[in-house]
Length: 424
Image 1 (tube, rainbow, N blue to C red):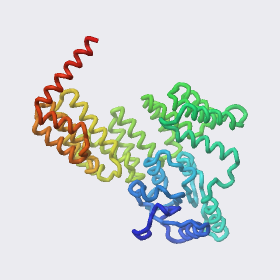
Image 2 (tube, rainbow, N blue to C red; image 1 turned 120 degrees about the vertical axis):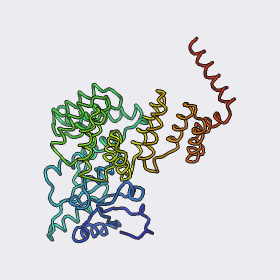
Image 3 (cartoon, rainbow, N blue to C red; image 1 turned 180 degrees about the horizontal axis):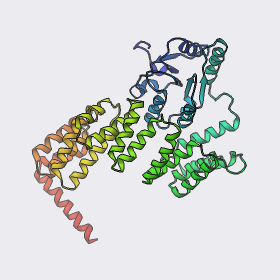
Image 4 (cartoon, rainbow, N blue to C red; image 1 turned 90 degrees about the vertical axis):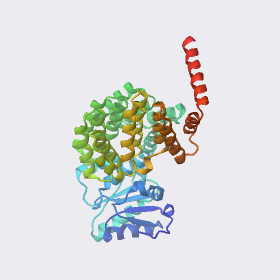
């Protein structure tokens, strides 16, 4: 690797490749030939921990046959970090002998820039030129219609809560304008389904995705859409059936195995959930969502030591910290203060230090205050304020505990407000 003084954000191309001989020489010479500066790292790297440095790279070149870590796992980790990352444009996959399952995996991940490698002089020269072409803005050999449709699909992928109705209407007009197939193509039906999904017209979206799959039973975007819809509408059994169907086509997808674990976990089927989380981790022992899911299963089983070990390995345990916190809140709301405090004690033990945030300590303080254990409440509120000095809720609660008169006044105001509400 480069020295520690390198400004990683200025490096235009990251090369994830364990090979230090012919593949690395081919890639580095191709990059240098078009004035692009390369950086090689091993496939064992954690992209999440390195994302601040590498996320700005114009292209990420990945050798699919790297040995230290599954290349698909690396791309899935990138998508887990940044779900809207433009895999189709920014990632170049190098592969020597892709299997049918690899090709399915490429389609699922959205990989479009693929370079075949052969360690023979004529083929090497051709591969080098192809790598250089992929460093340009557009996809080699893409037609004008391909470029337009890629822009449409990318616009759909970038839809979020800030997307206006006018923007959605413009996307739909573009879909209708540039679908040149006789009848409706799977691509058009899928694109329209995503628009219906984002406007919460779920029945219409479901029908359009089903029609898309009738036109092309291998159109993976439509499968992904249906699964997302079923999970959004709590139809977990239907989502699970589709996930299993897709798993038959490609056994390597780690996110899908983790999703199956999540569904079984939600359905209270922890033994099945543990199986799928374990299968995901067999393929990539760094995958944070699977580590977190399995940690939650072990936590519920009372195996706090194993849960703690799994979370120490995870590079992002925000979600499980949130879930553990929410369970504690529900126990407090139901008046089960002792059970809540036992739960919080266990949560503090298993969670990594970075996830022991001010909210956790505030909620413990709140629990103690409602249980009329004022001194303990104050101690935990102080811890919350050490972690976040501007935490207003913690400040107000601590002040009320330090000034009983203020607490009584607040209670009186609340009682009067409730009485007024009931009489209105």
